[in-house]
Amino acid sequence: MQILSDFQLHRPTSVDEAVQLRRELGDGAALYAGGTELLLALKMGVLEYEHLIDVKRIPGLNAIGIKDNALHIGATATHRDIETNPLVSEHVPALSQLERHVANVRVRAAGTLAGNLAFGEPHADPAALLVALGATIELVGEDGRRSLPVEEFIVGAYETELGESELIEAVVVPLPQAETRATYLKFQVLERPTVGVAAVARNGGAPTVVVGAVDDKPVRIEGVDDYVEAAREAVDPVDDLSGSAEYKRHLTGVMVKRALEALAA
Amino acid sequence: MRVTGTINGQAATLEIEPSTLLLDLLRDLGYTGAKPSCEMEVCGACTVQLDGLPVSACTTLAIELDGRTVETVEGLANAETDLHPVQQAFLKESAFQCGFCTPGMIMSAKALLEANPSPSRDEVVHWLEGSICRCTGYEPIVDAVLEAAEVIRK
Image 1: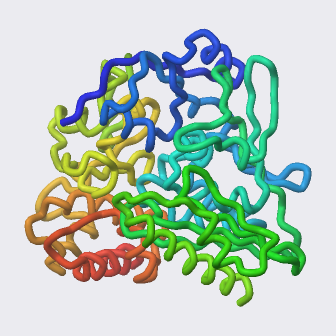
Image 2: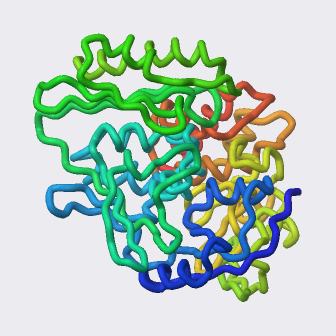
């Protein structure tokens, strides 16, 4: 049995209280929501914290709604909440579909979208599609609120723009227009995707393609004639359990081709 | 910290260290149906229901019990003659061999049928994708879940 080191649990009941705790406890504290990434890292001893700030009991933070022509997904909404939410399936069906295939049903029941982004694990599904859809992250901290594109929020592997006193309040996805087409396809043999490809075409225009899970952060491909070749050249894969770098480069091309075919279908 | 919740229909107030995992808590209380196996939320052998949804007890803090309901396989039947329809269907279809994955499979299947009483075969397969069985080849498990669905609907 793996044993966790002791920590103190804090349960703020408002976002302001959570920010205050973040400010007081500094880097000795981690935000804790679904725990599907954090608890694994704590169990393996990769991370250790004296304090966990459990944001799950902040009322309303898991709300999913539409405001100002955008889908607002509260920070503690789980993958399953998003998968089964009728507003998401009506307005951004590609996101419902993506969420339906994240990890397994137990991870989807506990894990949150915001937590997935905040943890910054590169081998994950949501970031690629969110980048392609132009989604932003709403952050709140001691200096107030700010909003960042998901693309800028993710800095690299396990590295984000999340400030020391900050937490994510919501993930905001602009509502795609009626003529917009979006898809996310992945290839996966283990628990995490080997390659994930999002493709979004707005109003019949040229698509934006984003390759996820291969590099440390999503790779955007647009304004090119040959997306397949451009994607194969743009990614910088490494050898790992999911396959060799060469294999993943090849697979990137295959998945980009399939994603574009799915968009055109 | 002091935690009050419900385990298998019984109210429980417990003093729990925040670092205790739900799987350890349950097994220490005698609910050994949930098995420690992969320990990284991949295999499903430790699946229990938390407020109705399946979770990996190996990667869930025990304090999550606070104000919530946990169900383990021990809560399903009072006696051998009083099996839950999912358990009955597993027996009928011989949906297990060594039995190690069975409590997790049954809790996951029960959660599915509570969320969706009429799943298609594909929906059963999709739901159970994260539960690993090394004996059966899965077909009898999927058959059993579909059969249990039919029994429960009647």
